[in-house]
Length: 504
Image 1 (cartoon, rainbow, N blue to C red):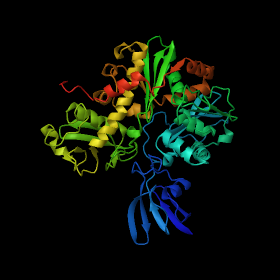
Image 2: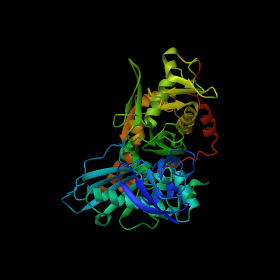
Image 3: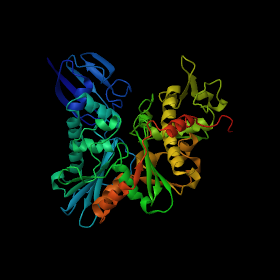
Image 4: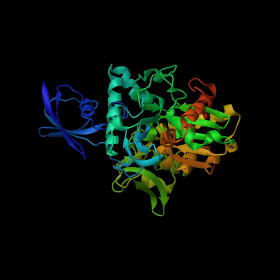
C-alpha cells in the first residue's frame, strides 16, 4: 500500500509517495533531504529527529526508527545552508569569460568545496561550499563504508549522491561537469573511493587496504584526477595539504595535523614524513554528545569567561540550539582550567565545584554532574559527554606522541604546528592545550592552514609539475598503523588524563 507524504524543511517542500513500512530516513534520503544521521541510521546518536504529523497527531520521532504507516507530513531540518567554517569560499562568478575551465574539489566527509579555475591564467573564478549530501548515511567514513557493506547497491547510491551534489555546485558556479577540462579531487581515501565508484569497505576492515591509492596506475575516469593516497586513513587531502603547506621543502621538522572524525597527521620536512591516523571519532562533529551538533546556524562555536560569568558565541546569532566541536573544546578547556572537571575526567557536582560555577551545575539520578551552559538550560554538558570528548582528545594526543617518539623528538624540538581543515582553523589552540589534546609547547608556533586540501588541489591544476610533486611527496611518506601498536596503546592510556591532579 502506498501513502502520500509531504516533506517540509526551511528551504523547500516535496510531495512524494512511500510504501507502507518504509523507514522515514529512507524516504528522506531518497528525496535528497540532508538530515543529520550521524550514526548512519542505527538509532545510536538521536540526531535524526523529525516531526511526524499523521491526521491530528503530531509527535517527535527518530527518522531511522519509525516507519510510514499512513498519509503524513514530515517536518525536518536540513544541515545544508548552515554556516560552513571554511575559508577559501569566494563569491560565485557566473560569467567566467572563458571556457578553458577546471575545478578543484575538497571532498570532505563533512563538507564539500568546489572552486572554479581558469586554466589559461590560473585565475579563481569563484567557489561554493556545502555540507556533504551523504550526511544522512552517517557522519563518518566508517558509517558510510558500513552502509555499503549492508546494501548491495550502497557504493552506487553514495556515488550518485556525491556526483549529483558536484553537478549542483558546478551549476551554481555557472558551468557543468561536461564543460570542464579537468576536475581535480582531494579527499580522504574512503571519500575518493566512493566518488570513483570503488568499494570502500576493505579500508574499514583489517588490514585496512584500499583498492586504489590513486597513484596513476589505476584506471581513471576521463577528465577526473585524484590526489594520491598514502594509506587507508591518510588520503589525498593530506598529500594535497602537505604540498600546499610547503613543508616538503623545509629543512626544519614540523607537525601537520588535520583533526576531524579521523585525526590525520604527518611529522617531518624535506627528508620525508612519518604519518599516522587516529580514530578520534565524530565527537568533534557533535556525535555522541547530548547537545552536540555540526557547525551550523544555532551552534555555540566559542565559550569564554567574562565579567558576567560565562559567555558564548552562536553561529548566525540568536538562539542557541546546541554546541559544535570548537565550542565543546572551549567549554571543556575552561572547565578543566577551573577544576570543574577533574584530571581523570569527572564532571563535579554543584557541592564539589568552585562556588562561582555552582549555579551552572546540576546532577543526574546517578550523582554525575551536568553543566548547564544556557540560561534556559537547553544546552548542557553531561558526564557522558566529557567521557566522549576525553576519548577523542586522547586519541589525537597519543598519535602526536607516537610520531614524536618514533622520530626521537620532543614537542619543543618542532619548528611549527600546521593545523589544517575547517575545525582546526576555527578551534582555539589554547583550549585544545588546556585539555591536553595539543602540546602546550606548540601553541605559540601554530600556522593555521585553513582549507589546505583545496589549496593543494588548486595547485595541481595551475602549477607546472605539481602533480609530479604530489606523487613524490606521497612516496616520501612512511605510514604507521597504530592498531595494535604497543607505543600507541600505552600513550592512549596516558593521554586520557586532562591534567595532573596536583598541578595547580
